[in-house]
Amino acid sequence: MLKETDFKSLMRRIMQPGRYLGTELNVSKKSFEQSSLRICLIYPDLYEVGCSNLSLRILYGLLDGIDGVFVDRAFLPDTDLACILRQDGIPLWGLSSRRDLAEFDILGFTVQHELTCSNIVHILKLSGIEPLARKRTSEGPLILAGGPSIVNPEPLSGIFDMFHIGESEDVLPQIIKTVQEHRPDNKAAVKACRSLSGVYDPALYDYKFNGPVIQSVSPSDPVRRTLVKDLDSAFVNLHDIVPYTSIVHDRAILEIQRGCDFGCRFCLAGYIYRPRRERSISKLLSTAEDMLASTGWEELSLSSLSSLCHSGIAELIDGLSPISREQRITLSLPSLRVSESSLPLLKKMGGLKKTGITLVPEAGSETIRRFINKKVTDEELFKTVALASDQGWQNLKLYFMIGFVPESDEDVTAIAAFCREALAIGRRKHGRRFNLSISVAHFVPKPHTPFQWEPFENIDSLQAKIQLLRSRLSRDIRFSYHDFAASRLEAVLARGDRRLSEVIVRAAELGACMDSWSSQFNPSAWDQAFSDCGIDQEWFLRPRGKDEILPWDTVDTGVTKDYLWQEREDAYRFEETPSCAEQCRNCGVGCGDGC
Image 1 (cartoon, rainbow, N blue to C red):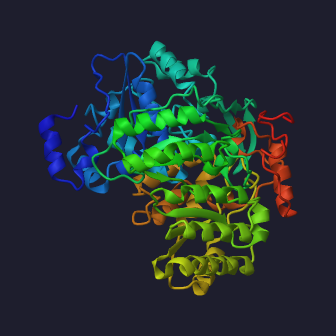
Image 2 (image 1 turned 90 degrees about the horizontal axis):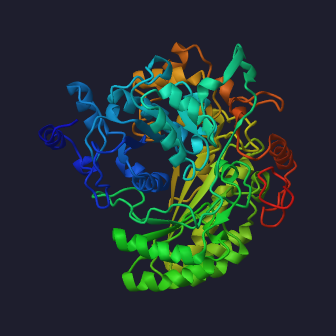
Image 3 (image 1 turned 90 degrees about the vertical axis):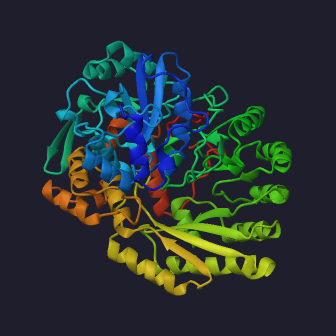
């Protein structure tokens, strides 16, 4: 346990000590010593990123409500504190208990994206815990992971004792109870948890390789991901922890629904969170009032993959408008899915406080939008920009993606033409007070999507496209794009197999850390790690065959492989698939009559 005098000494030696105080508003007051099971929830990135994560907020409140369970949080320390911990031999601790992470019974990681893999290794090493599961004893903390990125758990299968695939609110209390009954024998606990929904034990699966090719996997039965069927009865944390310092999403988050009906073919979330489920308006209004009262936040975000698709969104905005005006609460929406029906809703929001507005066209040409099944036209997008401008929005952000297989130079320059028109629309209303920024990402093929068989475009080609786009953009448009090498690494880790666990650990040993931060990303460490482990990165970037055994075939998200392949074929015919709300397409999830 970290002594108070040592803690104060550490805090005087670092920047932003507010990240590590652990005494924020609404932190649990339970006793570590008097609890029968101690869990530390870990977000493998900096405090300001992890505190913004909705999953961490939900699970913290859920676990804190279980009798006999003590819950704490930990995050990746920034480089200044991490350096001191290594030099002085001080183990990483849980924020509020200041107990060494090795003293907890369970360390539960949420893995939101692939570029946090090396951070996981650093957190374990800073805690004095061996990162490779095969080298750990059966005692010590049980290392558990969940989150969207572990729908392909195999790249991390050599690091974690156990995974939970899917939404965990309903299953986590059962996992906790089972682990309690078998502590401190982790192997027995994991074996007992195998019968629970969504639990993936990597030790259960035997992969046979012929060189880099997966020849067979046994057992062949995949683990089915879990989901919360009724969001109204699902746990909501009404008492979010309120940080002392600014965080990335410094606001109350009102989750209004899960899932998305539209079926964009590149989108992992759109497939693994099927079907779309809504919270009722009465539940949302009461939740919003309670959350704002218990936290004092001055912004409320209506969070989901496609917020304007909630069947009661107009009624919800009407219900929240008095709260927004009376309490001077900013009501914000995440990136918007544009349609004709969404335009009146922007007008309805016209009288509320505003931050910026974000639209996600994904592609500049309607040809590529048909390929990816982004069913929105230039006309609809420009109408939305005009209406938002008329209603007072002066800051617009647009997200695009490049690197799809059939993409041409004309498709890339269409992004610039689209942006010039959007800027002109806004400036006709606001003049130079209207600001436009665009962000361009590189397409990364993800498992369990129709594009899981696609290649990742080579970096030289991506660089040429970025230079072409830059040459066509006005200087008045703020332009940013993702790091090429980081996107490439993300593609490798997203579709990798269990051989990558050794690579991840080796890369961390060579200095890889905070790979999603451009200022910290160290591609040479990864290149060296792959070389040291004798693994060719290009193998994971190539196109995959229809009948090839994929590393993630041991996970069943509900959407069948046949359906995904059919969607891929429709993409190359540039055919659009109707949304789930319009027509059930028999994807396998079982949410409609056709399924």
